Image (cartoon, rainbow over all chains, first blue to last red; front, side):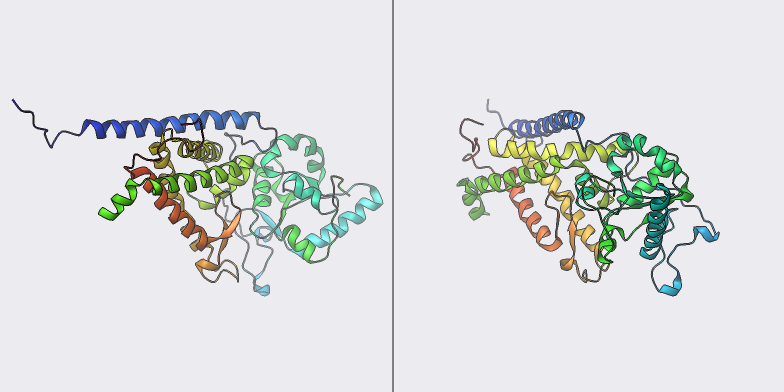
Length: 211
Length: 166
């Protein structure tokens, strides 16, 4: 009696290959998960906190008050700033705040103007705005406690990163308000960032010292 | 089809695919592992994953680079070769259109970005900011090689490329 293969029945060899591939795919995912989580937990710097939303956005509130209006007006011909609840400063405003803050610091040793550098440590040490504190957005939970007294005393917290496509200053401003409870009216983002600051031949300081 | 089968039977295209895809994924995976936050920012720029719940996008940033490195190891060692090729094919099939869409979204955002091929962007591939068009061409080539490694029936060059492994 001869056996004939039923074309409706799946080929067992092929099925074996497919199930082998699927188990391999799952094994790779599982091993990568275990190794990745272990590596993330023992990393000194740059580890990712799974429970933290690093890209939080503030709920958009329609407000017609003068303070809520974007700093770039239609007279300049520039596009208005996004309505995301973050106050933005132009170069001229950042410059004026810097000059006033430095004068205040020189005469009293304190200032209500505080520049905050949201970039990585290496970039801060390569060059930062004089007087700026380092508060890297992605490690802010480890740095905030030390800086909190100074942040709470400042009336103008001016956050910057590199400018251009960099959005870390926006993300840090959002977290300072929503995660760390600092008053939103004191928080400003200088969107031009260090690139624009340097282009305008403003002073910078290199190294870990603030000034 | 006959010519392709004959070429496949030599095992040389499979060998070529394993070496090129394997070392490419090893390099880019290692780059991402060295700076997971830069990779996290790149993933966020694609707007493919939701920011909440945060463990999804954060988990991808932590685990995906290790999948790439493991796939590289599997392709080079010959252990779970087809499973690794399926992973690399899937990743390239997802990220290549995503890079295209990212590039399209950036056209006109800067004066120098007049067309897709003018756009320079960080695709999150581990290579930093690169011109989008050459990156798309490279990815299409890698996708073809991954598919070849996945579908090849050659019995030659299936073992380890590193002596004593696989």
